[in-house]
Length: 409
Figure 1: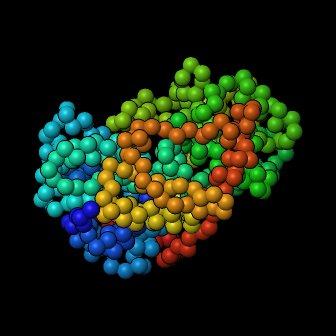
Figure 2 (figure 1 turned 30 degrees about the vertical axis):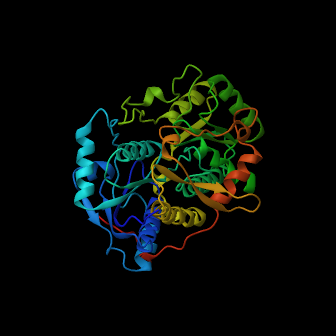
Figure 3 (figure 1 turned 90 degrees about the vertical axis):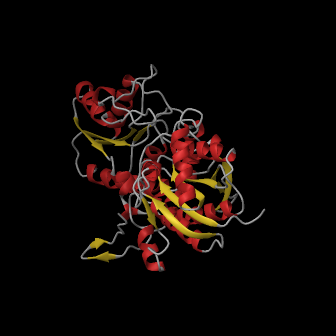
């Protein structure tokens, strides 16, 4: 295949992670060494900013390894993000004509989009449009999400660091709760609309240290109030303090979210409800049914922005997959998402390409074999899957006692 020479553009979409900029660093490094990409642009606030021609020239912003290293440990999306859903190209030719116009203006021949399953919907639609267009361009998706819910990849960049933060925080909460003999229940809520991967990570500290979540509830198992109260009572008979980990997306068999009464009902561009309040509702339930001391904790945004608890494995892999996205595009791949494939035996990963159309708008759930038979904890098989992803610590640069972060905008 003839080498396609031109410029490239990269964007970040959806919820940020503490590793998404490490992937951006990988894309920058890959573009620099590609031999095909003359200039690398960055779109501000994803495809939404791109449509407004809000574009940065990244070519000369990172002239040395030190600046890239700081970018890799900077939380959130340095380029900004969005949650814009593109219409099917047959429904709105104007928006695709606008995209084509900007591509031609900047001689953009490579488009990289770092995001989750909704972002792969953008990759799929753009690839479909330009396959039937005379303008030659390659569209590649790069995975990202703390939820770890993308199909066709072993795990997602950003998840390992979020899992490390959750495991560490749950261990610290459990240590704090253990100092009293008073009967008490602490309910900790994690992100996870449909998939309970993040909440499953709360089982790591108990397995390795004995201090962690005593009960774990994931969206994959229908929630039952009576069974939950019985689980808590059984634990309180054995110990004075019980720590409960629960996904924000746990729901009853009728489909209603446990935290629904505390939610606004608002939805994003992809129709997803904004979730919260699950732990608070369960706090009220425990208070009413058991009457012991009880509190709720919602981990919320720190799960995805706590760069001080990076997993080195996560950051290293995020850089690697960003660089490989460039390589695969230069080799001729388009309409794909780069993905991790776990090696057999000792932990390691290789990178492959999967069709973005098979990832878009789909959700990878925690498999049943990772959840215990009681539906209130995880199995050793799940521990083995999770453990390598949180390993290692990345050294941070500090000034005046605070970590140094890079600001692009």
